[in-house]
Length: 166
Image (cartoon, rainbow, N blue to C red; front, side, top):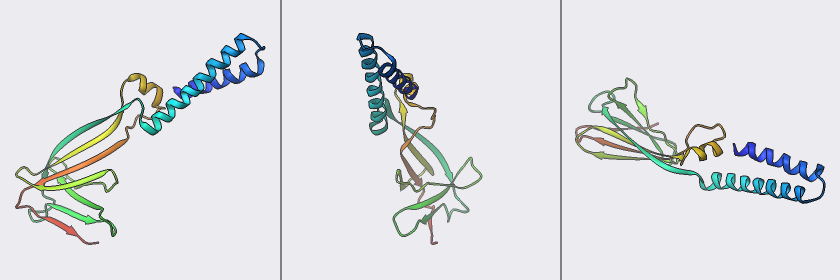
């Protein structure tokens, strides 16, 4: 919406500067359209750099775990390259296939021991504060940007974590 407003204000500004007669109407039209252009560009820059009109929302999802193959291989950890990044494979009780954590810069993973075998996935995303901000800044993009994702694995002491070498 703000892009459309910027385009219209640019045409009005150019049209007033080129075709309008000198006088108060021309000055007022160019002043108002120039302010709309400057304000729109400023708002776009603030939204892009500082997430103006947005706030962070954290959602927590808890899923029960089941062993991958047997009690001996409850979780599978595989290092990526030579750095500290890793992929953890696990199985949720309701799923038939194994799931994997994504090794991204926004992802943190923690392993703890406890009685309920579960994974707690905490996802923080940017969302628009209100409908007006969504109309102005969404630009047709309905996806929310992930700020951080944290996996907290709680596994019983009888389960083992298997490290796979590649």
